[in-house]
Length: 94
Image (cartoon, rainbow, N blue to C red):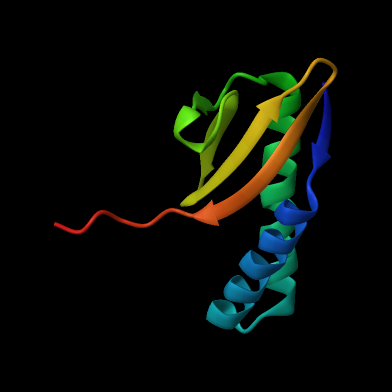
């Protein structure tokens, strides 16, 4: 199945890259991390579109896939998957 990304997703992915760079201080590591994240999204969702859990709290038909503390919100349309956004999961306070 074809994967499409919203401008919001691309903007948020840039924020993820900035955060990873800030923490690692390495361009090489940051590029590798972002490519791995994108590859994960494309490979898993194109093969297993329903892998993510239903996340109706974000809207009707929205699903959520979690990868390394990041949540990816997406929607399955008739002939493609629309990846809407990505955000970092927060740990619950105990």
